[in-house]
Image 1 (tube, rainbow, N blue to C red):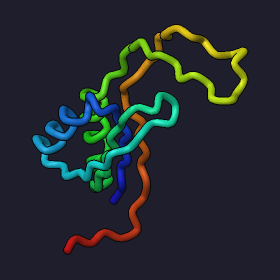
Image 2 (image 1 turned 180 degrees about the horizontal axis):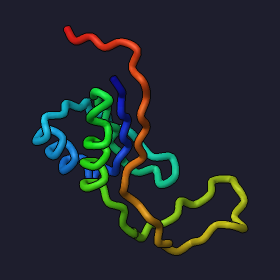
Image 3 (image 1 turned 90 degrees about the horizontal axis):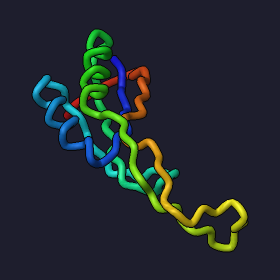
Length: 109
């Protein structure tokens, strides 16, 4: 058995949740915040048998596509202003960061 941890952008969260339910996978959703853009994310915890890992990863891949977005950089507070860019920059957001971990024991009460 494995635990899949998938960190996805909030915009992809509902679509992914619906796709997992449709495929009969249970998941726990946790609100999280990204460190780079300080934007909202959703972290999914999905427990599954080893045989289903590729299927879950494919569902995540289909429902969490990366895209370009303009973001306004955060002004440095007391930091070095030499590298501060005062205009919006285009960055790639979305997609998913996925971790697959072994599960030693699973119980449901």
